[in-house]
Length: 285
Length: 256
Image (cartoon, rainbow over all chains, first blue to last red; front, side, top):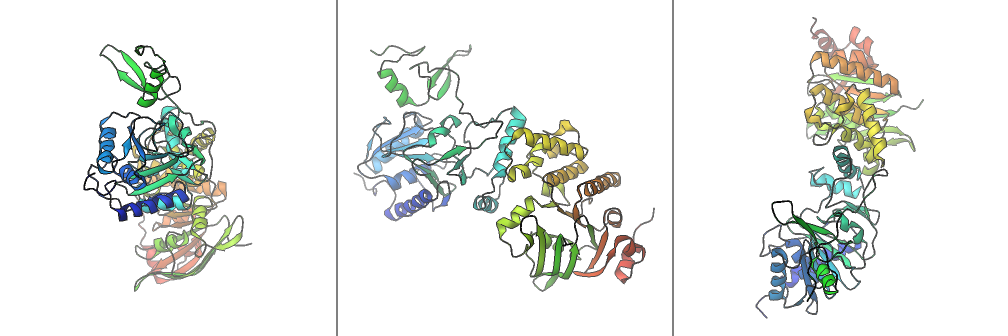
């Protein structure tokens, strides 16, 4: 291997991050401050997620990175290469085979198992930030469970758009206590957060780690007369014909041509391999 | 009858400088008390001590809570005090901007306190917001406008609506008419007087405008250099001032 310590970070740093992770798991949804390190990538590219992944990786792990559901986008490719080089761990694009999945903005379509860990990259961990700019005040609000303000945001949505228009980073309440920002995943993914895998959230610039243990209750906030809805584009995937997956819209030409494809590339490929063909798909050879 | 608010020798010092010293009074349900005095006389310090924004150095502020009867708000835990301040108390700031969320619509501003105490029904919150806009004489179709689009007088009325929506029993007002032109002041005072009578509110109003207390307050407390120099019924104090400072204050009012 190279001259890097295993998974880039030094052992003391990994220890510090693991402590924060354990504390986060003990208090689901609580934002644990940690001493975030400079990473060899810019803030906003997943420095928090990378540090969390580095702290939980073992040499036996199989690592997968997705960015908006895709394994082959710049962010995903560069982080995967980073750990191939600094940790020498096996990597995969298959959700099934991975033991640690680092993700930006999506939860994989396939249900995760108890022996898997999902690591989220988080830009702004504080769900109340845009309503209350003072950190001292938001901490107090978390401590005293004063979450009325979160509903003010949803109220504003309904009064302006006639429905809760927040479609990503949709606030959730974890285990009946802490209100948490699930990172900018589409609200379609919110119901999946009650899963068997461990979910870890790392925000590098904001220096916060939080976590959701397996099988924890995660409730999306809503109003009695405007209940939460997990929304997706009302189409089937044009490549694999899946009707249950979250779709990306791809503009094909300047004459209104468009197609909808699964944002989870691994899910789409595995379906095509199994013989499913969508409207614009080609039959597998 | 138990007083709604029992204040016992409250003092607040800023280092060697005196904020207010040895202030005691009782406020009974439905009563409106005015606090007047020149700038720097400790009126706002006292009000902030009473409302829990500042911690007094000495003394007790005993509030008659709905559940547990009289409780000292100075020694009570912070969650309890914050709960009080968004249910049974209301605080009207001099500058509406301090008391409003400027980036949230008028309806959201009024609804915030309802949502803070657990209302999760959009239709009901919306109805309450529209109802309260009407009560403070703001047109119903402004419910989705932000306070930045409102005039100063409307902002102040919106702030009042936002505070009164949970049906508080005690309202703290810090110069509620400051910075408004006289005709708007008159309307606001009219409105406040109506609401106070209609809802049976108790209120403590800090002001340097004697006309405001003449109109709203049952009782008056005159402060100078952090001390209370005179108390009594409003008309009595204003018509027959005893203390030299009160005499000066009453005689300095411009006659038009």
